Amino acid sequence: CFSTWMADGGVQAGIVHGETDEFGYNIIRDPVHVHDFHATCLHLLGLNHEKLTFRSQGRRYRLTDTGGKVVNGIIA
Image (cartoon, rainbow, N blue to C red; front, side, top):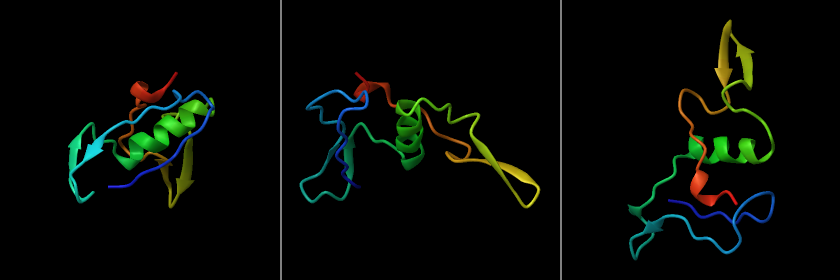
């Protein structure tokens, strides 16, 4: 589990998304995968994460790998 603080840029003010147990170890509600977080950040920057690719060793890779969905619950 991790916490992050996001300000402005299209993120709802004062929102808390997700919840962990009392030890901060297990996710209880609304998990967000790191690929989803990256997709959301790229969306807020005006970039389409599904079209943003780079080439390495003859293969095209996305920054969000094969997953990544925009978390609309935090966008204003």
